[in-house]
Image (tube, rainbow, N blue to C red):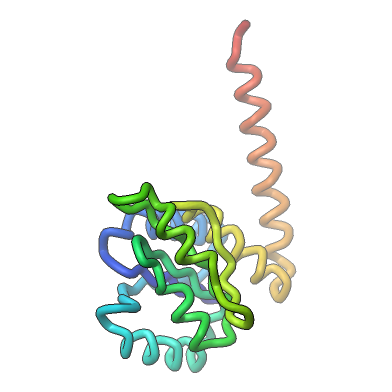
Amino acid sequence: MKVSIIMGSISDKEIGKKTVDILEKFNIEYEVKVISAHRTPEKAVEFIKYAEENDVEVIIAIAGKAAHLAGVLAGLSILPVIGIPAKSSTMDGLDSLLSTVQMPKGVPVATVAINGGENAALLAIQMLSLKYPKLKESLKEYKLELKKQVEEMNEALNF
């Protein structure tokens, strides 16, 4: 089980950290790289060749503003790509969201919320659970943890 997290810039590191935290919680092997779709497109091509030869099973791409990274990677590969639109300084991430989600027919990118690193990791884990049944049990336990947290919130109300 291997997930690659590709950031368009070092400014995406905080979102990447949230993604990594969830992958680590589920003991998923990962790697993190910075590859710019616009400034280093040849690196994107090299990365896809590497990914397909080195058992990467899911790619998570984080990018802001024009946010073409996920689409470029999806266009170069048949591996599943999850896009995380990063909140940008100009349009609060709406530009990134639209750039990530509006893909042409034949080049799908699963897209999560703006800055949604945690959900991107969980979606990758759900994809991997189709091949690795042990992950299904871990996901069920995680959902129970979430339920317990809500119950604790209700207890904390003290009205």
